[in-house]
Length: 202
Length: 225
Image (cartoon, rainbow over all chains, first blue to last red; front, top):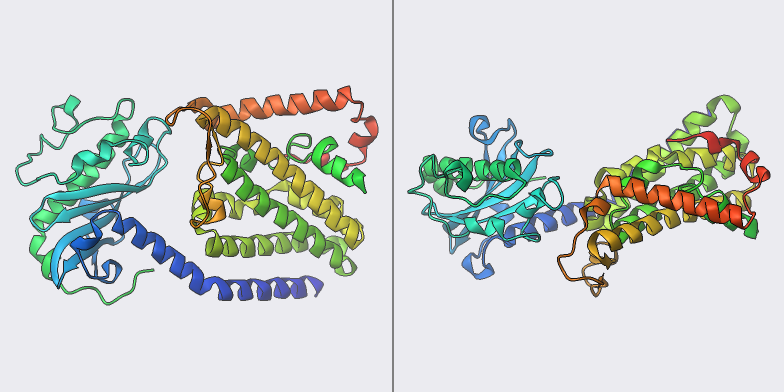
């Protein structure tokens, strides 16, 4: 009896806390996501609300996940100017790597940012812009002429700079970008012309 | 009264003498800001748990006391985690799983069982405060040393704790990109914790404050993990 009452009392307190923090936590999560998206492109290059113009992509073969990958579209006066993919690669050296890949409508890469990872400090963590410029090699990069062989690190005969001591990490990020670019080229029209999903993302 | 503070901070320091809660102590002490964030959350948890347990003493039958402690601790930590995510969002993201894992910190269950369930409210609260401060002290000490040796700075990423509107409080004592990886990684935490434990014990022995009595009056000091 005492146990049940105490459990009920704690349950009530938790319910009050959850209820009173709900709105603020949702806002904070959204703000964090928006802040990450806005880093990818100049603020004056688009004028829509990014997180309200999304597409859920179900392509397990291409994105290593059964879950939907989210694509955000940046528009200037209604015309799409960039598409941003929020995806995860499972090939990291130590767990998953979450990244954002932005492409111009002509297929040029606009920018890439690593959002979350647990790669080795001092070696693999140089995929973060905060730690090194490595990820900038993808900025404003034309992709239509790249062959499969080009999508490799230099030491494997490709076109991209490696990270010393973090080959697995660099290959994982490079592979995720390659898959995104290829997906974009294959589904360009659908990505640019489908109306936005109605759902508000969690 | 001052005996509580001496016990909590030095003679029976939960982190450095009782060696309780080593997992967060080693994992989250890579920077001072992380250490402060988790230390304060743990301090709040142990203080509030001791308070609640002491208040509920009339209903604490022997058979149900452990479930009651677990409900109280899990409930409080859930609330603290929600509040942190609402008001200290970035710090909450950085500490990650270690905020909900405060539930499993033996320090909290140990103080509830060994002390708060047998003491009046003021004593239980003071014990929670001093033990929590002792853990906070161990975390911040280790956090400061690791950040200094690992990054050459103190209070880096201070905005995680004090908000984006606050000035950047980072004290950079070495060139910007100085890094000594060993101390940022878990092995460095083990080495430094060992040195801190040895140093504190040596100092306490030297000043004759660790006596047989100190060790015997806290039977739960045997719990570890």
